[in-house]
Length: 162
Image (tube, rainbow, N blue to C red; front, side):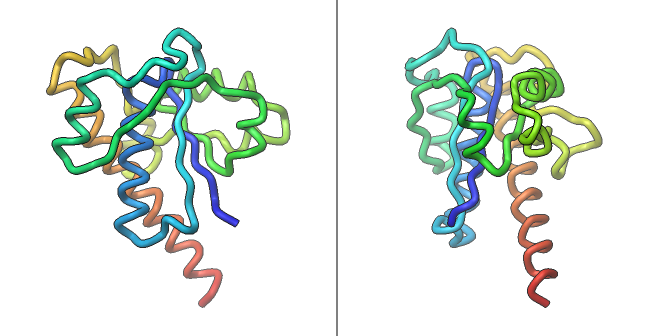
């Protein structure tokens, strides 16, 4: 059975969508698509069913990453369905833990805890989706964190079988 990862930000139009696309690409490049599924969602519903913004779409496409996403909001069943739920910043993590059933709170983590400086968020402030430098920084942080997560997870699994 595939492990499931959910990336979450406030509106699902920028950071969590980029993180989803980046993680899916890293998983595919590692030849592990059969073992992992990745999705993204929002804690808020203001972007519900909207297509992703042009900025993240073109940035991912320029980096050879497939990025086709319609925003969706977190659902209660997501807490049971996903093995790993990554918030893009500390506030999102807090929101998710408030929303989550008690038995699911340990699934919620800060994505930046993997590969980035301690407590560093993917979203450190308000990003302007029309500013390519802001988007590049989000993309770079997502790439570092997603790669570090998958590498760490693979090392743990390898230790179990050694």
